[in-house]
Length: 217
Image (cartoon, rainbow, N blue to C red; front, side, top):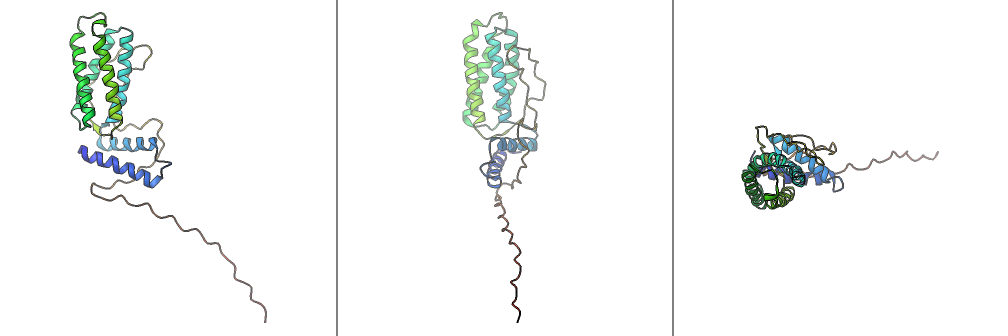
């Protein structure tokens, strides 16, 4: 599906949720539900899903650095770069694209300098800069509309366990959003269509009134 069409669908679907359900129910959970339906329709994960994975991978990388685990840092970089590559080939916002290129460039330098190291001290500054860029990238991706992202088909290298942080897992396309309520998603018109207005409420029922008694002649 064309990324611009998906962007249009996301906007219209969000507006439909607001108009049909009311502002009180059109909260973040409903928006997540719409995003999940869009991801299911395209058969791909969204940029918001990828941002969540990058956030987990950033926490994992930070913990590996603090524990001076060279092997875990190397595995994190091997998982990071393919994901940054597909984000770079997607139609993301310009600010996110710039941050993504910067993160990939920094990760490439870490990957280049890691072989032969037994301690991370020589590249601590570089990895710290990468962690900062990843945080900015995650924030930028979450702040824009969700777009489909085809994650790498090949299995990524396994990540060794690092104490204190969960092992990141790639998101599954079309997986339900954890904690999202079972909210029906309204029909979305094709591009160029018009969002139908909600049906007017039914008039209140009129109670039956018995006929007035007729006086006897």
